[in-house]
Amino acid sequence: MSWFESLILGLVQGLTEFLPISSSAHLRLTAAFAGWHDPGAAFTAITQIGTEAAVLIYFRKDIARIVSAWFRSLTNKAMRSDHDAQMGWLVIVGSIPIGVLGVTFKDQIEGPFRDLRLIATTLIVMGVVLGIADRLAARDETGGKHRAAKERKTLKELNVRDGLIFGFCQALALIPGVSRSGATISGGLLMGYTREAAARYSFLLAIPAVLASGAFELKDAGEGHVSWGPTIFATIIAFVVGYAVIAWFMKFITTKSFMPFVIYRIALGLVLFVLVGTDTLSPHAGESAG
Image 1 (cartoon, rainbow, N blue to C red):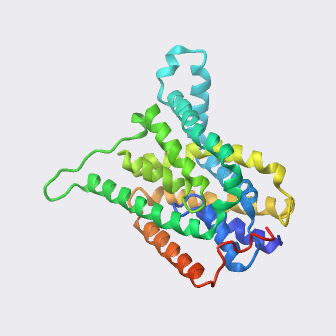
Image 2: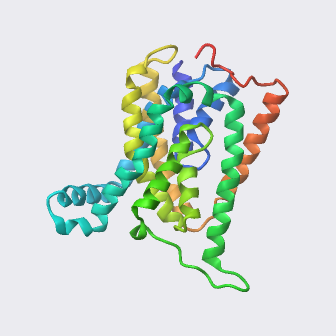
Image 3: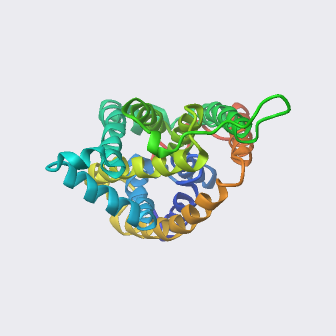
C-alpha cells in the first residue's frame, strides 16, 4: 500500500465511520473502484482505533463519569442504582454479542463477507430498515392529524434487554455494508429511543468492541501488501477527520432526518449491483492480491 492510498483510505474511514453508511464497505469499495488491493479486515479494524480515539475525546466527560461510577459501584452498593454506573454495565452487556460473533465468524468476515454483491445487498436492506426506523421516529416526534406526538425513550430508560438488542444490532456490522452506527441507531429508533439517545449509546457501545478488534488485528498488520507505516498514517488521518464528523453528526441528528443517508445507501447499492452485473467490476475486485 502506498502513502497516497493510506491517505485516501484514512480520509474515507474518518468520513464514514460515524455516518450510517458503513465505513468498512466504503474502504472496500474505494479500493475496488481505484483498482487497489482490498485493504483487508485487519487494516479496517486498526484504522477504526483512530476514529474511536475521536469518540474517547469527544465523549471524554461522559466516559470519565461512567467509568468512575462503575468502579465505585463494585464496592459501594448504593452506587449500583446510579445511572452512570448502570451505563457502565450496559455497555459491557451490549458488547458481548459482537465479541462472541466476531471471534466465531472471523474467517467469514475476512473472506466471503467482503464480496461486493453482499455489500450491495446490505447497503440496500439496511438502508430500507433505517428509513423505516427514521419515519417511525419522525411520526412519534411530530404526531399527525389524528394523533398526538409520542414521547420517545432516553438513555435513562435503557435496560439489559434493550442493551442486548443494541448489541446484536451492532454485531450485524461485522458484515461490510451494514454500518455499526446505522444498525445500532436503527435498532434504537425501532425500540422507541430518541435519535440522540440511540446515537450516543451507539458510539459508547462501539468503544470496547472497536478497541478490542483493533488490538486483536494488530498481529496481522504489516502482512501482505499493507505495512505498518501507511496503516499508522491512515489511523491518524481517520482520527482527525473522524472527530470533526462526530461533532457535526451529533448536531445534525437533533434536527434532521436520516433520509439523505437512506437514499445514498440504496443508490450506492443499486449502482454496485449494476457494475457487478455488467462485469464492469468483479465482485472480488482486489482480493486476489490482497
